[in-house]
Length: 462
Image 1 (cartoon, rainbow, N blue to C red):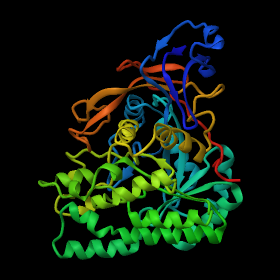
Image 2 (cartoon, rainbow, N blue to C red):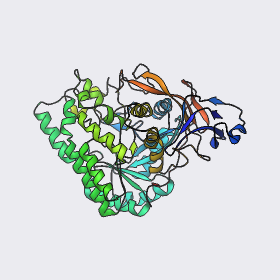
Image 3 (cartoon, helix red, strand yellow):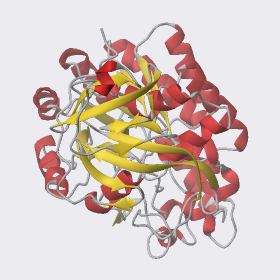
Image 4 (tube, rainbow, N blue to C red):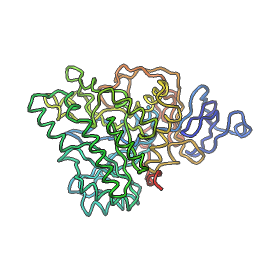
């Protein structure tokens, strides 16, 4: 039993006690009610003065991910352990189709990376790198098996890039099979021209990564992806939205009642091109794509989260160590591996947004738990506190203060993107399917506790 806390979901806030049995939530009852008094338990956790919230659902991570001649520095063991420390109890990671290979080969490879190593539950999206008739047929099979979302890239020509024809064909397939297309929306062909021109002119520092990946090219690609989805009659989820102009495109589409959704990430809400311009190559720590934007874009992102033109905050957790990995791009920003660490701090950074007045408590839970669970077919098993749901529960201290630092975080990366940032609020205790994985700031979890979770289809579609 968890007693004495303020239970916060996306739907309501109640002073209630919560009963867990056999890895699921058995019951909730209002504080001091006859029903609560009837609860009996082998073990009681006292949440007095704390919030009791659903475990976080981070629908965008890249563990052990190949990029730029190296691999992200967190594997499924270290990355899911860090997630647990941060109150995230489910991740959805990305399996990669290698060009010329079947989707099944990529998915099996990612199952091999994750199986028996995860501290919390996990699912997979599928990255499409090679759209042909075989790929299209396999998409149907994967949806039936619970891999119900497919990521495509308008960026990275020669690596993950798909052209408009391939994108259209894949979207048409999802319109038929119920899958959801996730889009990295940047005009990669144009960006490559600007990269080439910048390097030729001697502009090689990390800050130029942000300058060549222009906001207008994110907006243009977002617009194009929306129109292709309309032609296909398919839903669209745009990942890691960073630019005000891209939010505007999503708002226009949603104003027409189109099934178009958008995600942003904490780095775009709290960091900016000022970080990319840090001296002594330190800006390389903040190289990710879409890139950090000038600070004035942040207001549009916060507004989009409040108006529901953006529905989800994920991390795009894809860390590379500064030493030996980010340094691959010294003298050539285009060789800096793209990605940042973040899976451990998403819940806390969004609670800080509550403290700062950007979001309500219920909206915090909506963005971090409930909507990602619904978007990717995990609700009501994940993302809420209701009888029958998995007992993924976080006891959260809203008054504890902490300072983020590489010296104290648990991600396998040698820097913090938020070094020295002070936050109010901290995860205290975490249950995953009723098993304690973090207790009052002591890690009690284990590799192999986390299970693979097949997913249903997007629950926002009629």
